[in-house]
Length: 143
Image (cartoon, rainbow, N blue to C red; front, side, top):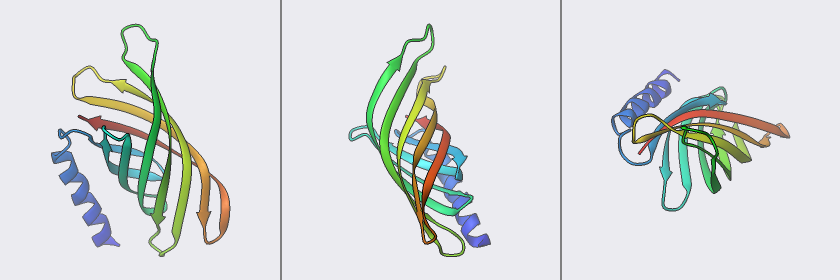
């Protein structure tokens, strides 16, 4: 388990070194406490890999729409989409989380990065059954 945590930590630090490349970023939230992501601007896809309360997780999200929010002097937009997360706990249990998502994105004061806050709702599918599931993220995207 310690080697897995060390590997994830090294991966996150390496991704921060690449963070100025288009579409890379970092996030934190629930159930993934820390993660890295790549957002493809040409096809509206985002891929993430993180570590959290249920172990290691990977996600793929498709953005269906994005619209600006009227705010004086602040570059805000909201977006929505669909996605799926696949998690693997340290006990070897598999979790599947298909979900819808909605979020708010802010273009920060310096060019080249955006901050976002996102909520996800769907169903959590495990060996124990199917239950409602919720998740959230706070992240920074470096372009």
